[in-house]
Image 1 (spheres, helix red, strand yellow):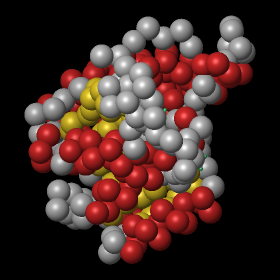
Image 2 (tube, helix red, strand yellow):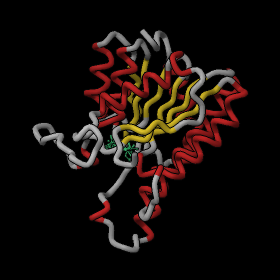
Image 3 (cartoon, helix red, strand yellow):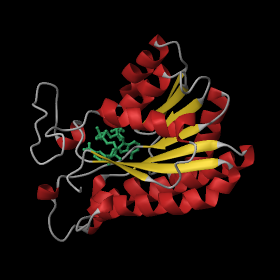
Length: 243
Ligand SMILES: NC(=O)c1ccc[n+]([C@@H]2O[C@H](COP(=O)([O-])OP(=O)(O)OC[C@H]3O[C@@H](n4cnc5c(N)ncnc54)[C@H](OP(=O)(O)O)[C@@H]3O)[C@@H](O)[C@H]2O)c1
């Protein structure tokens, strides 16, 4: 197993990509703290992690609650008995067709605060802990929208995540902490309006279909594992029509 005995935190693990990453980490031997705004929404993911023989620590944590970041991280570390891997996955989007133009200020704030501000402050809290222990991995879930021109808040927020990931990676690498991002194209989740039974077809994408959450999770396992010790500050593009 690639993550045997590791202690991981995955934000936004009630469904979609975060849930798939939490389950894949458990498959690879990690204990996993999982977050969402309501703890009830984490029950199924927690049960599946436990069924794999790993510890699950579900925690109600709205990532917008910036003043509580250090307290939450300390709680996770204490309950898992360490913190080796953090995945900043929680995020929000509205499909571009639903965006009024220009974006109302309240929507700008909502998207930027969850997708970028929260990632910044959680990363800073985690970096402090990992710098002390001189080891750790941070993975930020960006988007292919963060690697091309960005006319709407979602793309701008993810562009920020990609740039911050690169900057933080350079700061933290000398301290034994690796920071990277994953930049998926469209993935079959609620966020994309996908539901079980709906076709995966997406003719514009290289694979001619949406990626699956499990395929993003596979890349997260790689980035969290000893198989990627020289990958630093990257944003790995997945099945995107950017290319
Ligand atoms: N799906 C795609 O095509 C795609 C492509 C590229 C990148 N991404 C990125 O991948 C990540 C996951 O996307 P997804 O498709 O899996 O989305 P999703 O199915 O909508 O799930 C989003 C997750 O984020 C959590 N979340 C949202 N707001 C939160 C908040 N304020 N505090 C804590 N948790 C919050 C949700 O939890 P609750 O609602 O239960 O609180 C849920 O667990 C996002 O960062 C997204 O931008 C997605």
